[in-house]
Length: 328
Image (cartoon, rainbow, N blue to C red):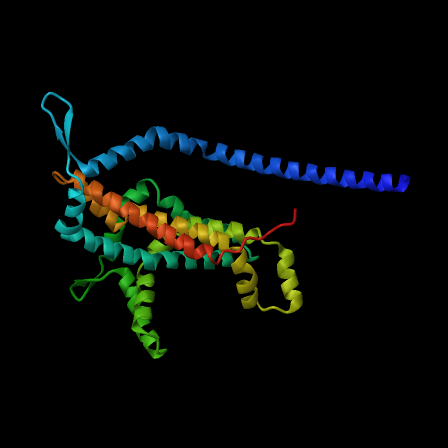
């Protein structure tokens, strides 16, 4: 009888220990969730009290006309989807600029992700001056803010770099690099389609923009690479795996969540930067007489397109994301 009591006693202790473990695990999750809400609380409060009224006013401007009264104030008149119709069917340049801008972004975003991942893998290797090289590649992110960003948006540096006289004609430095490398002839000799050659040539011509906008993505990839346990790579070396196999079987799946984060970040950054052609077109339209309503409608259509692009890319990347599960 005593043995059964002891056994039952141990069983009850084990059950109570399991319950305590579940409770502690649940309380830890609640603390993490609480910390997350505290972290985003300033943004949520600022959005509700500062940005949300502006968003509502922007929606009104896309469906109403505003007329300022002589004695002060203004009157509103419902026009429905008239501004949207003007943006799509009356203004001939908006749709063309929209298609061209989205096409350029579709080619630039993969180039930024691939370049930042490639450089992050290189900078993660053990070598002399690794911290210096990391700082060098992050310098464009710092220089792309403030006065340097305004200078770049005014195309002062671009005009200075592109003014090279050759046979009485002007040719940009980027075009000279692409022609010197003779990418078209290289790919034609390899029996590759001309479309791929044009894409690579376009990437070479936009190498400045790609390097300039890859600093943040590089840091995120570096953080993901450094979170991978070295023991995993040691076991791969013991098993005789090559560097190529290790990258595709270990490194790439382990940093796939960072690929998703960088993809979403790059899409939003590319579609909202001041140098974006669509953003410039909408801003110029807003400055035109009686262009506030039309430009606001353009902005909301552009916003919906960006949200759709983010959703599509997030859905595609989420299908390949690997999340490492840790034993509790």
